[in-house]
Image (tube, rainbow, N blue to C red; front, top):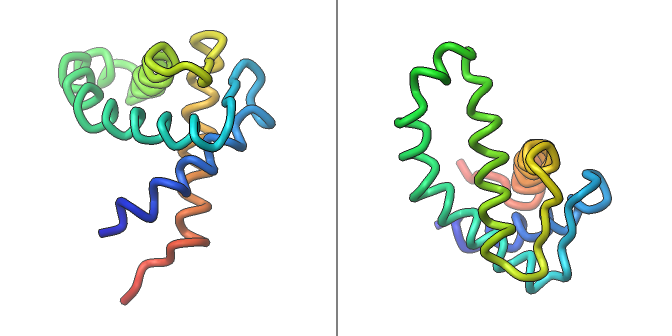
Length: 115
């Protein structure tokens, strides 16, 4: 049941992105919460289908095409929400990389796994 406590942690990671990646804007914490929820839904529903459909090109690029898929998912979330903006494809790719690293680090520090 780590999903509910991880949601605000992901929102905090989204709030840090405008300071690290040029071309990304987040209006506030409420927008970041909605964006984290939308990104979670997109990554749970749409991303697996895209990964499966693009498997040949992903294999040819040794997995680097996954970065393009992540950037596109970031752009899709920005298109669906007001207050969350991504300037372009490369901002989406860099934003998705930074978001992954920041949310992983915050999750490891704030929500350690119990043994």
